[in-house]
Every structure is written in structure tokens, then in C-alpha cells.
Image 1 (cartoon, rainbow, N blue to C red):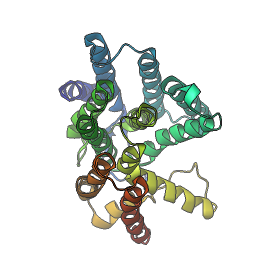
Image 2: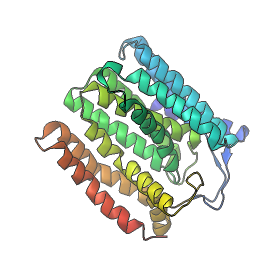
Image 3: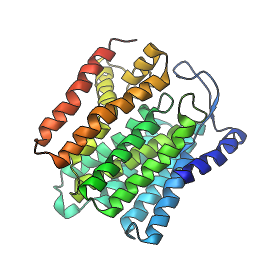
Length: 317
């Protein structure tokens, strides 16, 4: 966290000098010009921490980790370029699919997986990259969600006796996005931009692959913690598809955006997400490890109240 705090503080004046800024438009939830691409500082902190952890032996010197670090750096740089000069979807999507394939191949055991699951995992990973990008539309929300998922997985990993490598990765991700949140909390002094939101999706996908392959923690726990973003983006995408809208066209119709307009506050939406995690999703995630309840029951308990709330929020403008 300290490394990201210091790095972000050093980056902020550079962003202004280099004109890495986000100017408001008709879809924006902010009204003032704000420095962006703060994800460069986040990813720098994550990468340096991972390298230090490998050198100290806290994380094993696994070639897969080196591959993931390289893919993360490349994705962050692509995101930063997209922040400055918007890249066409026809260029971004093949790159996202390629990096997703690299991540899945690096983190998965081919011998333990059926062939048909590979394209599904690659598409799911690519979806995660875009998902966090879609949800980074108000101050603090995407950084807070990343902190809560990684922090929740840290708690689960420590309590459940997960391997040290996994817990260390969770701590590093939570610390980096937690440090950035000091600058991104409403009213934001700095946006993470695509450089940070795409990287957040990549890191959340990495944690998901680890739970899927490692066996120490239930993938249901990861899914529960990710569910606020998964449900909002998934339902919004289906709704737009049913209405015949171009899916690549930008919009501001996610539930969190409707709620922010209704309340007139970004901080209240962030607070609602924090309460949802602390009072409901994290306890259910812990129950996947320490209760005899069926996993599907815990999943239904986690998703049903959110689906009910989303149905209510869809009525807002």
C-alpha cells in the first residue's frame, strides 16, 4: 500500500505535465478535468512487489508468474495508450483475447482440464478485462471493488490455510488498489483510467484462475465476491442486446450509474458496495470454507438479493 501511495503521489504531477487527463463529456459522471491513467502507478507497485516477493522467496520463482507479470505490464501500457488515444474495438479485442489466452495457459493445468473448457476460460477471462473497465464510471468504485475482492480472498486464504503464494498475491493486489483509493475516493483527484481498470480485471482473473486450479479455496467464494460487478455488467449487456443496441457503443445505464444519479453522490454508492461486501458477501464467502451448507445454496443466497435490487434499480433513469 505504501509503495502505491508514494508512486501515485509522484505520478500525479507527471500526469498533469504529460496531459494524461480525462475531460468530461455527456456520459461522464464528473464535471471537472481530472488526471488519469493512474493505473500506471498501481501496476508499477504490483510488479515491483511481485518481483520483491519472488526474490525473497515469499512467492516461488515460477515461470508462470513471470509470464503473468509480462502480460500485466503489456495490458497496462495498452490501457494507458487507449486513455490517451482511443483504440478501436477491432484492435483491442484481439489483443485482449490473446493476453487472456496467455494468462489461462500460464495458470492452468492442461492435463486436468477438458479441451472444451479452454475457449470458455479464455472468453471468461477476456470478459473480466472489459467488465472492470465498464464499471469504472464513478469515483472509487472499481478500485474499492478490487480492494474488497483481493482483501476478502486474503482473509479466506489466511483462515483457510491457502498456499502462501496465493495469499501474498492477494495482499499485494489489495494493498496496491487500497493505496490508490486514497487518491480516487470521491471527489477523485486521479482516475485509474483503462491502464488501471483493465489491469484490475486481469488481476481478478488471475485470482479466479488460482482458486479454480489450486483447490485451496472454493471458486464459489471468488464468484460471490465478484458478483456485484458480474451481475451489473452481465444484465446490462443482455438488456442492451435485447433492445438491439450496439454493444460496443458507450453508455451510462449500469445500475451503479443510475444509483449515483439518483442519490447525487458517488460516495454513497461506494458505501453501499462496502456494506454489501462486509455484511453479506464476505460472510457467505467464508461459509464456503467453514460451513456444511451446500455451495449452490450459498451462491443463491448471495445472488438473489442482488438480482432483486438490480430489478428495482433498472427503473431509475
